[in-house]
Length: 307
Length: 260
Image (cartoon, rainbow over all chains, first blue to last red; front, top):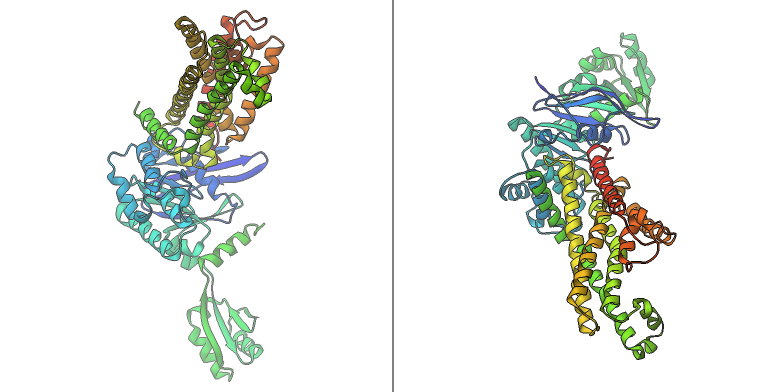
């Protein structure tokens, strides 16, 4: 499939600080790419380079196979974007702010402004000055700037900041629909991992300026650790019985045995049978699966941890 | 042209809603009003006695006639203009950084050059309006207080000089735009304007005014024949080169500098 967004050894340094180091990204058409990282990991710097707002120290970014640079105005016709917290002209109303973007994007007619106001449920605030908007509605207005021209590509930096749970759900559904039904490619950065895991089709993890992992979201099941949690009245005895039956490495922690033996995870009923037959019946038996959040934390821990 | 028109229309929309625009208009009406008051005091010393200090200041006009008053109007546009037009420029360019809207307008189909050119155009139009306000307010107040010695020839001489001084002062706004963009706000730009104003006073005092661009409008505003205050063609060229450098520097900055 065609790579819509691609970076080749993309790097950015500020004096002696390497903000982003040799990032290689590949985002395919219609994909929702979740770009994950802690604050200061290099997400926004990467996004700014994808938009030509800052020049890479080395390496290149390509969108639709064209090299990104600050003055590639033709390319920007196809991109909708939101960088960090969206700001608007404070003394202009929501409608006037959108009108400015409409004109600067050469969109004819007033209808696109009405449509995007409806789409992002900003109707009640259309004539309100931007300075009087709540954080959530300011965020919606920022998303409206990104979506007003029905772009092929959306580059969004923390787009759900400040939105309430209903707003987050609504935006997630909208982006999923755009990707699935309209072939829009969505590149979205976030540190809200649970959110990304719900709708991203591909995930990249950036840490301390380096890309530490990139994988398809449906691989998450394979990548995430699973373990069998076992509770018993006599934990020591239960551990011995498990070991005697050829299962490896039971670790007792906080009153529970953690067992990462794949045979036990696939057949927990065997553990139950063994323990019952040995007169030490289990009080808890649960297959625990790591989520994206724990996986992310484990991945960055393996790559230098949080500094 | 399509780029420029779109950018200019949006700049007009921003300007229309801006309080600063209306504040500058009120300020530029207020200043000639104060000048008119000084003239009134100069003509009627009995009022000056009641007002104390103002009476002494009123002697600034030299002759209490239209010639002195119009000379003062030229000096006013050279000094207040330098500050006012500098403020206008720093606001038009610096507001995108203060309001943090700069990223909204940089990755669009409209070219950055068109946006910068539209901003310069709005600065010129805004400043020309302020020039017109000083002129109309100044002349009207002069008539109202009944200054003696009006002649069409005097006005014609004044008018051509007034337009030249205003034009030169407006031209000197472009380096302010560069400083506002480079400094990402209006503070550095305003500091630069004040510094240039102070420097122009000192440099003019030592007789080097014709060589220092920010002193040139002020030098032009003093009565002809004043020692050390004669401009030469190179003086105008220095202003034009400074203006071009500011304009091209601003465009280059917007096109190529990192926008963090």
